[in-house]
Length: 244
Image 1 (tube, rainbow, N blue to C red):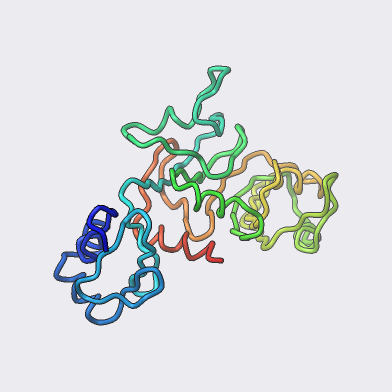
Image 2 (cartoon, rainbow, N blue to C red):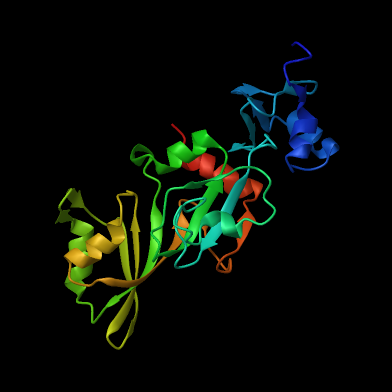
């Protein structure tokens, strides 16, 4: 293998990616727990962290240290652009010391809040947003109540919108507070304002919308306006979610 192709000792690549010490990585290789580009790795192998597909215990390793994967809790009132020509508050206002140029994966409208993923991994971003991969997203919504049981059944069965039919993958009534109901709705498509349009169609408009998960990534207790780096397990789970 040429010395100038960017390849390094496999255990070094794994250690830099956070798998463990070089000795621990060597042990994983020796035990047959590592593959590189679909081939079982052996001690002494080399890999290019930017191009090699490295699997450890069946999970894809994010070995390229130039790639960034972030979760953000977008506040209400912030537009889903990196910079806004109208001077409105935008995503870049909340990124702090992130040196790499990252892009948002999908969108949340200005009045919605919650989980956004940010990355400079264009291949993964494309797969996460392309409908053919069917990555589910879950939202917590406050809607006009009371909420008849038939509403959930309608959403699961599907309703007709002006640009075609749409339906929820999962629906749950979380709580009822006077004239407001709190629901959880999951769907895998990403048409513009799809959750709000679905709820409008069944007569229960949304007053607050919070995205709580994208595929395997959860919003959790991340505070509004804050970002955090995804850990190796979360990144591997995202790769798994969009496997061909």
